[in-house]
Length: 213
View: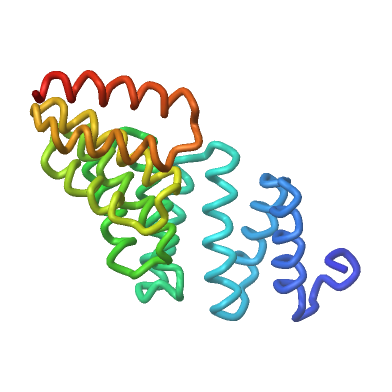
């Protein structure tokens, strides 16, 4: 179609659909070319916004981290309201910052995503990752606070919740808060499906209960 109808008004839509199909197939380099073509040719705002966001995802998938970040910055500058992607843009930006060791910037982006009211499952992940970034920054109190928010989730067996519980257990131990550490380890015993972790947590409970006597 693109070769036979070079002047067609439907070219951007065809390019966008082709890019979407290639993305789903894991052909990220070719998809990036398609989405770039949509942006170069111009289309309705909705298609332009989706193409720009998808281009950023493609660049992340092919390892072009700096270019992905620039594309996300461009998205924000072009569509300040977010066009329904405020959470996704902040999440991707936070992920890039965390991946590149920019932990303060990652925290800011993850908190921005939280402020946009993501679904509960993602909010739990964001709380855990905020905690992890704050640990990297040496902010123990802030890390525990974020981890505890993740722990409060009703999804007791969620992997990110259990990671938060494990980190809290270790950090409670560091400040010799034995009762909270024991409680956290018992939480892992009740809800984790990892047999080795459950066994290790049980052993640690016995050791801490002996210390706390």
